[in-house]
Length: 116
Image 1 (cartoon, rainbow, N blue to C red):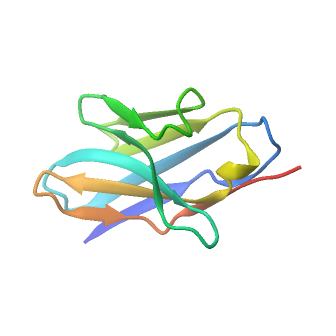
Image 2 (tube, one colour):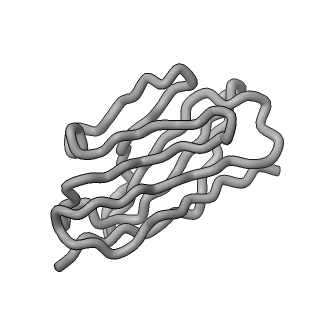
Image 3 (cartoon, one colour):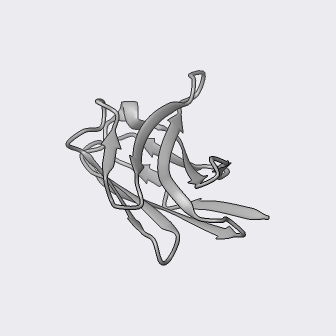
């Protein structure tokens, strides 16, 4: 059984920062990509960022220059450093983990609210 657990969400003022973490545990036969998606109320889930095993990253245009994704392979952990947060970043953030056999595992999400 695989567990993916996010943490680090919360309430922050516009311009502030948060750091999300996500750890994967259980039997996964190799992890390839780890990443983040988000879903705002009433909207579809959207891509935020991914990190490959080698550390290569990809970002949605809306977060480029403000968010930084990184990972610790030994700890099976992926991070999302979010700076200069905007009200439109308010959403539930979900971590996703893809195995080398192309299975996708998702966490339950952590809420990020950007408001004054």
